[in-house]
Amino acid sequence: MFDQYILDRNFRKARERLATEDSLPLQIGSGVSAKIYNNFIERQEAPGYKFELARDGKLFKVDMALEVHEEVVMRLSHFFHQANGVHYNPTSRKMKKIAPDLSIRPNKVHVQAPPTFTMRPVTRPD
Picture 1: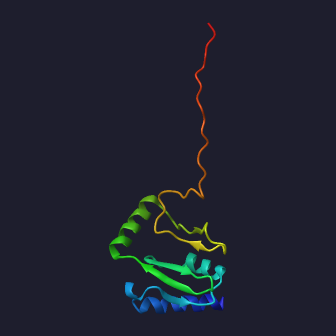
Picture 2: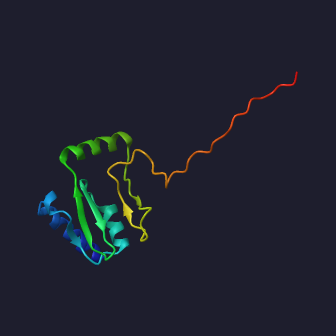
């Protein structure tokens, strides 16, 4: 829990510094485990920021959205009632969670294709 406190504090400090696109990626943590990172992603109300956990445990703020982009994402989220798009990253070996801006089209990895049926004409005996 102490690590979670440090990570939250560092995130607040990084947010107060008003990061610009020129200063990204900005390191906000080190020695972060996948479990702590997942809790951080699930609990934070940080729209407009994207985070990345490196293999060595360093956590970076890697991207930030423009105000117009965030307004569109928030409106679309409201229309589609997407509560929290947090899911496990299918390409990660450490079971890291990711949160897309908005998920409208399902990922083929998570959603199976529907079964296909072939229709044959029915022949009636004369």
